Image 1: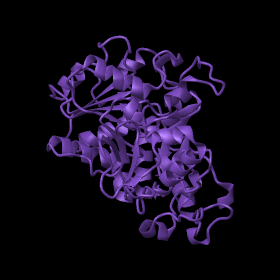
Image 2: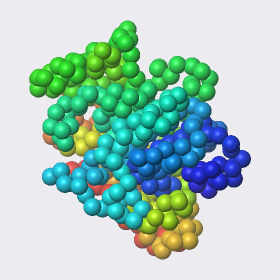
Image 3: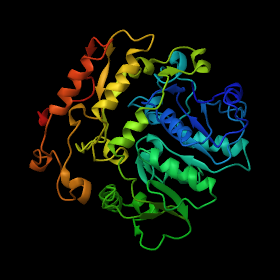
Image 4: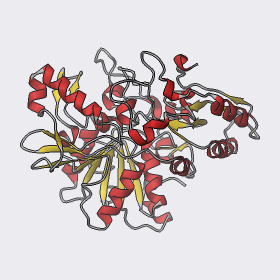
Length: 415
């Protein structure tokens, strides 16, 4: 059963109102690869009533208000990738196609979708629940940042979107803590992985160069980002604060990584691995072909490639699922009526990082003065591909599975 996207689906669950409404720039695909589906199902599993509004029209209230207004908060995400990347080529031209939109035509996702959707809520729901930003677009724009499209430094997206809170990174634990705090009428400002606005920086916060300073001076921008990056490790990070206008962005330390049991629990949720019927009427979604019969083995990456955003979103600590959980999910996939025998991908940000991590990192945090893989693989990493190879062999033995593919990236310097 999908999360409700219509009043009829709410009624089928016996719900007359929702605690949380998630608004996304993508079509609603109920898959563990889609952040909205994961966050929604995690909240429902914890007893909250959650609905989804996918790709609402920007010129009317009809789509936005079809589920009513939430009791606790709105959750807003631009989708699985930054909306400007989804909408624009590297040269700035408008893309004609969109792999996350029904029918494939790029006509339903606005530029800067997080800001657009948050403003849509403010426009049509004047006195409403708090707005909480999340997903990759919000996560990577949470502090003052250089925007290539505008060729200038922009302030935190929390301020441009006029939202109340921002949850960055992989937010399963953080969003449950936020929902519980709001349900209890408590201030959520101590939650890890949360950003919010304040009149003054809290006591003990490390104050970054201001937005105005970072926008005016490259050296100040570099110093700002260096300090920010140094405090992206959940073990060693301090609370940060950065003045945006007359107010400060308060950036709490990152959420602690999920344990193997917690990550297993997320993937044990009953996803349909399908496109919601309302979206299906508009046409197929190409992204579903890639993720429907794929398996996530882990999250996080310690590669720290300079071009990659994973380190500041998923984190530098690899969190692996148990082999038993992955095999169980493969069994559910094999039972899908459209499955034809091929697991199209078994992996994560880097497929061959599954099953091993630096033992020191869990208690001491990532090293501040060196990288795990560059200029050479750190001897403390103790590379071992045995767990991955054993897992692939076990997956081949799942009834109904004929072929197992590793389509995720492979680090050749780890081999």
